[in-house]
Image 1 (cartoon, one colour):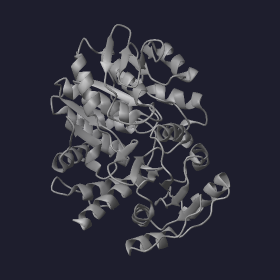
Image 2 (tube, helix red, strand yellow; image 1 turned 135 degrees about the vertical axis):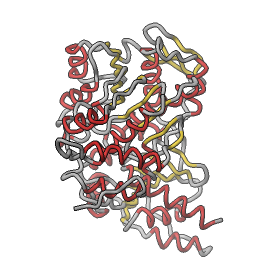
Image 3 (cartoon, helix red, strand yellow; image 1 turned 180 degrees about the vertical axis):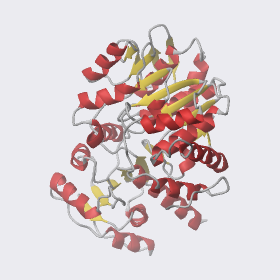
Image 4 (spheres, helix red, strand yellow; image 1 turned 120 degrees about the vertical axis):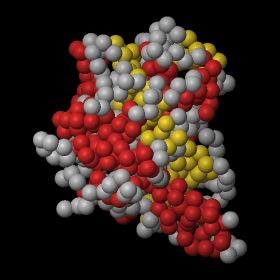
Length: 459
């Protein structure tokens, strides 16, 4: 038995408890979470946007939030997973939720799930989803933006009916839960659509299953290329929808090859509800200029250039490759790379192998973890003639003011941790080089922690 935390317990104690109370971390289905929602009488009265998709969900959510805040609305944003702190998952007008508010909501959900007639077991994700939406519901918000965690149809977020649902890209990921092809996965993601309500699809080539399900249930289907679109040049871009045009828009502050697609989906979603939440053109401009979303092709200031990207499937890797190509010339590109065991490392490496010169491989921890040596076999199989090289020796030589050994054109090196890899590579790489940190939310989050620690030690 695990001791039950209280309102006086810390957030860390609560999260440890939630990790232990259900038999498995992912348990698809809505019956349990629906029952606890009913016990809480949790029915959001504000406008709800739900965002599903394989890639681009988080960026689309962040743009929606930013535009609505610039329009003067009070907005709750729920996303997952987080990079550094659990509180990143819930924001109110761009500010992270206070730990004390989260703990209060946890205590209320715990009370409801233990109420008569029976105790209901919830996963970590189900429990925290209910708690965050419960907190949002007490804030008199104008809108909630809710990101689906996995799939759509059976995801805990889908227990709340959206006023507008968005489906971004559909590609292969989480096949063990969603199916082995785009049609199966598309059907799961289309499960967030509702009869008579707008369903915005920003995938330029959506699976037939997405369109069929929208039509079968009578959703108001908005397709990219048919109902909304974008055009642009190097200076600015324009959105065109069914009845709304927005010209002379600045490019989103988020970098990456796919961000205009995500931005146009966000604006289309706002067009579908403009009778309830009118948004002026200037709010769209400002919202896109000011949007922030860490870890999504995030380029850090300083030299060498460091790029962070949480992409972890071949579709995301293909867009990452395009985004890297748009950055200009770098003599060498290093990457600090780690991936979970249930992700398609072969497809990701294949998409990027011609853009990366030096591979610095790190382990991912936990039940789904993959060792650096396992990743090495994938990289060597795909890349071919890459050599092992002691970058640590080069880093130490440079630190002491010595001369580094000449590195080969291609290299593969393994490390015990992200900490070791990040400290080594940032020291050994030339100022004109580029360092990419990617493959997992956990890897990017750990790199950010190391970066913060290095900053503090240098002050």
